[in-house]
Image (cartoon, rainbow, N blue to C red):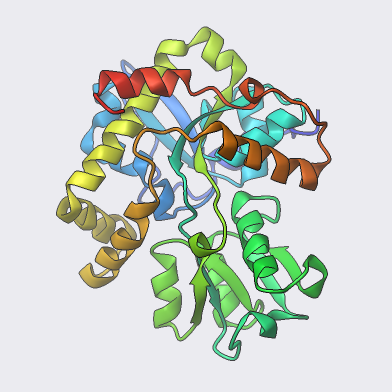
Length: 323
């Protein structure tokens, strides 16, 4: 199967473990679960906050956060080398193509990205013939970027999109002129602006995309209680971040090494994009299916229940009094 790549786990588990959000497994008496994130951005900070507060241990496990690209994470998920993948739409795409994976929770129902360009780029039209970038050209962020460019009059043939690594790597590529535009989520969007780059707008004003979590069909069948506790952890963390702005900003300052102004601005941009109950409607799911079908050529008629299962997050939300 094309999702499986030999040796991916060794590469993934050893990549960027020095990050402040990435640590080794915890004590042996606590069940260790592994979750992959595609980049160290604030739209994936639920996991880091949960671990910092000990919410993962409240639910009976130690959360190990692993940084890896979406394609590698999907292969590792299918192989059973990780338990969860913070890539909801990519999970839906994989399921459409027959992979035994399924989306289980949506943390964000609006994209948190800002389109940022070099200072000589005065508008979207100036990107014609230029090189733009995302972390992975098959990621949700890349899709969102393309949609924004289309909305502003550019076809896919008008520019070249490349994969240029995580936020920090793309920021370096942007400031040195290797690329002319990209999208950043908090806090890197502010770092780019402070470095003299220019904002062309917010992605949420042009399109929508879901960010969340996927797992395997096998995991749901064999470890449903673990899945429920994992999702309850995320819902608890989401509620805490929204109700504790000062403490969350303090966390952002410490873990992302930012000043208070930058951290607060990032918090204000991020919070309105977060889902309250971890779910989206069937019309939104169908929109996601159609957009990925157009890109991948996956067959039509795949049932919604094959690509998403919100039954467990509904259980977790009910337990927490979330509607």
